[in-house]
Length: 247
Ligand code: F6R
Image 1: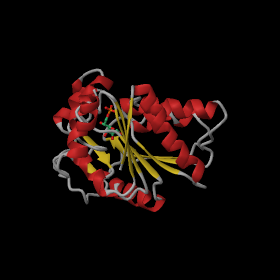
Image 2: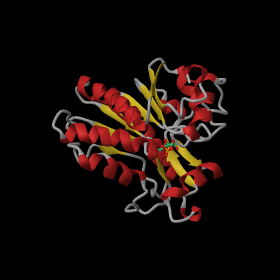
Image 3: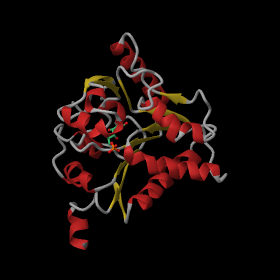
């Protein structure tokens, strides 16, 4: 595992974008696994800037969402498919049909999760971007989730709903369920890039990187993968022993 500690969020976003750019440049038909959430906004902005400056093309790239809320209208701005279009896909030269995600409004959610699992597995993700929840979740795999789990319909923890309430008018509007890639699905990616920013991520990062590898901290599962990069800002790294002794 390679851990990069950036001075601030902007430097971390650029470092993460460098890692993604490297994959996009080196694969003939790159397949990116994409997360949504605040952490990724700067990473996508950095990639958009590179594309708009003419140095980077996504014309051959396909992107696959990690997860999607259940029950939001397909036009809802917080549906992850719409978030990724607004933050990345519509701002670069990705093909219109190169954005994939689970359909959270499917009448048969379990079948939809299985369909998406098969799609992601067949795609062979080159690099999977991950954020980390304040409870250590990755995608919507909450504490207690098996590391072997595949894509499924899950119930969001109250903590995750509270954390995500900032994107909605009120907590009552935050969906209670999602379709998420499983930890087993995520670990099939060729490479993993975890990004964490801010002091509120210091504890879950510490648990994930140096605590026990345990289903109580879903993000600790990345330590079972052979090709992992972790990009942190100084605040998110502040409880790691090396970062503490340097400060
Ligand atoms: C989003 C996702 C989540 C987020 C995590 C961190 O697709 O899967 O696991 O990555 O909740 O969210 P932010 O970046 O908003 O702190």
